[in-house]
Image (cartoon, rainbow, N blue to C red; front, side):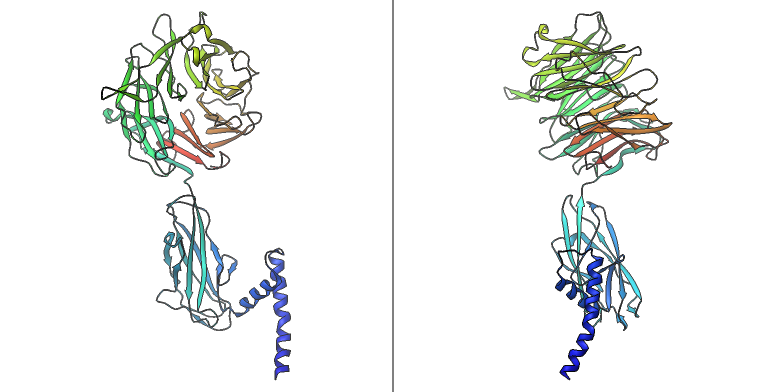
Length: 545
């Protein structure tokens, strides 16, 4: 009898070895599994009547089912199949056929829809589903499950679930309306502490209720996934251009009122939308930068630039104040602005669309004077002595300069601009001369002609990474476009972010936090979001959205 048993085993063993060999080939000869482990796996396979499948993949008892990376707070449903691979009927048993049995992340798994078919004949199958809803971003979640049946080999078929959560990314409307309320000119600002918060400021015009018009701000503490209700921080139908930024102190808002030809500044402490103090500039202005480049916070100070187009002669002003407030005799007092006139002694009327950047040593300004793109470098240590300021001409064009943005790193300066030649094509100039005295030949950094908007926003988080976002009509299609460079502007890749109708001409904004890139823009009625402020978010430095 013993010899007969040995003979039977010898006849079965080659089948197991052949099965293990086939499995070895199917796994691409993974060296992490020894031949012994493969044989043991095949032995388990040979015993199973009821089998679990994730698509075409067979999940053995004790193995893991993986969920795709999921945005936290959003459910991801996975449907799994139970199949009778044996030769006898298998009956699924309760009270719960599929249930959770433990695991550190089991709270993220639920919504189990139990199998409907309870008895499976050989070859028959049924299915069940499980929801994975992670509660927080950038975390791993594991859960243990069991499937109950009368299968002789594995009446309690155990397996694990594994999933990873990500931050919110993609596209959504922060705010939208059907047609009597309009939203435009979005700005973004990010505050890292005490709670990381993304802020979106934008102009709103409510034709039905004008009192609801002005500058509104919303905030998000979960990376743009959900947003607070809007706070109307400036109530006026007369808001022209405005700039919005953040510092370690809090939020800063600089805006113009068109009819009154006045500029105003206010600030709110970090973590609040309480803009408790407003400073008004008494001079008139009717050309104030509508972008977000005329305000900067650096070195514990706030810098703003504005063009007085109503004075004689016309003047471009640079204003500087300490960031925050100071205490005096028990009262909280705002710091005053000190004003400086930017003038190089020429007869030009320059100052349109001022844009500024500040580093540890200098304030850098770019501004347009009709057909000339001018620059100024102002040493911080001698800011009160105009004799130490240096001026330059970056570009002269037969058409008017329509828009400009300046950017500075430790060794180079960059100017992004467009001209009113009917193309609106964004262009780039660079300089290794930080006195801004000489500039490279300009070129289209995007490689695309465009007959759309001159609106362009640029960000340079470090000396190598650069991002530009603008709206255009390229190839006959209205679109929001982005170019990015990872080699200090030597090469660029351009991609459309939104090619829907209702985009071209929209104002745009951008914010970069590490490898996360936010782009915000306004849309109008033909767009799927209607009249909206829409935001897009990339987690991989703008490669995918």
